[in-house]
Length: 276
Image 1: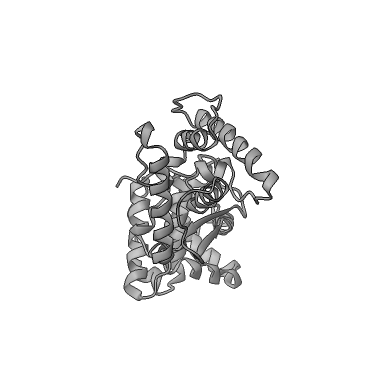
Image 2: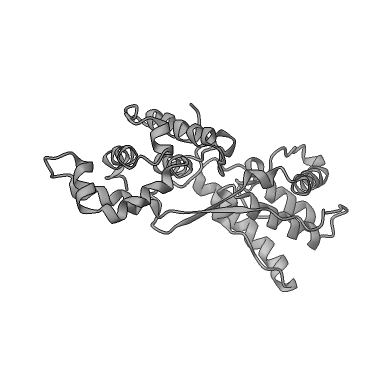
């Protein structure tokens, strides 16, 4: 199973937040129109450069297209390397490009809603804020759709702290989860958060350092079958990461079987407890 690496390689910090667009919002007609208008505009501006943008996140994150776009719009040359393959080089280019953008926009009262990390991290919301600001500043001959709104899902990395709860049972001769049931029954309800599979999928992406495409699972599952699909998909990711096939059934996790869920989390903790 091939997944696109996206998140930074370091272990995520506690309470760190990452955002993604709700899949339902991506299907909104005005949102899709906004993206199309901006893509068409960029391609019109850069037609002489023989640059064709097809997807904003994938084509703008490294700074190359943004560099050419700003140079064309502002009629100035930026002092940056033409081709940068490394992440450090890409971020250095982005830094230079965005500083030039900020020098143009700030005097006119624009609020900066993007930065190097969000653009390089392929955050579509940040990229859209940047492009709309540029289009309006340079009075692009395009008609932007009005009242475009999207729902943004904020993932706060707090579930990792629950995995540390399991470390207290390592030296026990008894079954780890019997011990956990004995000593922390008031805290066990937290595992119910994993019942729909969403946190399990997102957690695997964080632990294995890749972005899980949203079309592969249900971000807001509504039915039992959708939840089972999510948990089953999470189990597949675990096996891809080198874990044995979980003994628990996806249906057990969805049905709030606490011991089954704890066994899954314990296996994750055992594998990733020393990751930095």
